[in-house]
Image 1 (cartoon, rainbow, N blue to C red):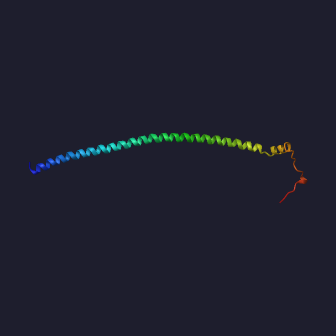
Image 2 (tube, one colour; image 1 turned 30 degrees about the vertical axis):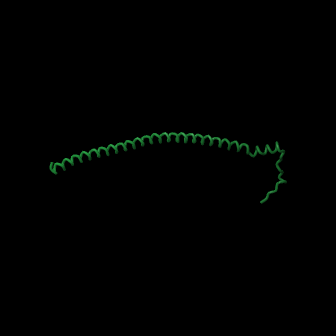
Image 3 (tube, rainbow, N blue to C red; image 1 turned 45 degrees about the horizontal axis):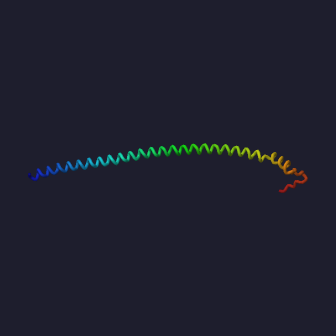
Length: 110
């Protein structure tokens, strides 16, 4: 076999090796991309579940806030009822036997 035939034969061998390496690389890249897609899909499912849990907790907190606001309003009404001047005066007179001072006993200080 002459030198030219050997070179041609080696180039065919090299070409086959190149194709095998190229196919191996493409399979590897495709495998990596598939793995990344799978990881991404799992992450989407996980995060969607987390988002639902956070939204549920947020709704519960909104309801709790509403209940607390109602309770605060009721307590303010109750407080204003208990602290009404007429009620305080009535209790002071009835239970503590207090009387309002006469105008002559009142001294105004400026």
